[in-house]
Length: 163
Image 1 (cartoon, rainbow, N blue to C red):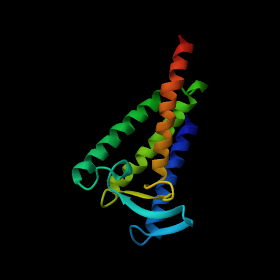
Image 2: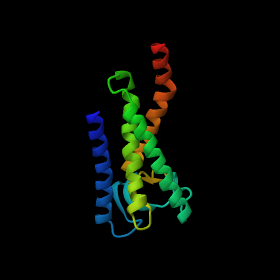
Image 3: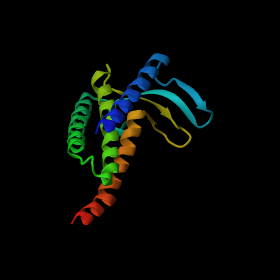
Image 4: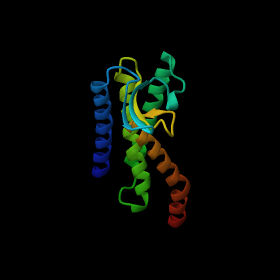
C-alpha cells in the first residue's frame, strides 16, 4: 500500500508543481510556448467548466463540481482502502484508483483555492485535439480507462476463478 500512496503523492505533487510553474512563467491566459511546431504547445488556459470546459461560467456549477469531486474522492478512497493489496490480480484496479485519487484531488485543489475557481490547464496538442489539459486530467483519463477495463473484463474473471 505504501508504494501506491507514494505514487499518488508523486502524481499530485507533479500536477501542482506544473500548475505552479505555469502560473509563474505565463503572463496572461492564452499565452503559448511552442514545443513542437504545428503540433504541441504549452498554452495557459483556465477552465471553469467540467471536462472539455462544459458547464462552466457560473457559481452554481462551481459548487456542483466541488461537491461531485468530494464525493468521487471519498468513493475512490474507500475503494482504495478496501482493496486487496496482496492479490496480484487486483494490480490494475489499484493502479486505476492510484490515478483517480490524485487526478480528482489535483483539480479539486484548483476549484477550491484558485481565486476564480478555475482549473489550470496547459498541455495543448492542437494538431489532434481541441482541448487543453493538465497532469490531473491525464491521471483521470488513464485511471477511468483502467478502472473500466478492470471492472468490465478482469473482475468477472476474478469472480469466476474465486467461485
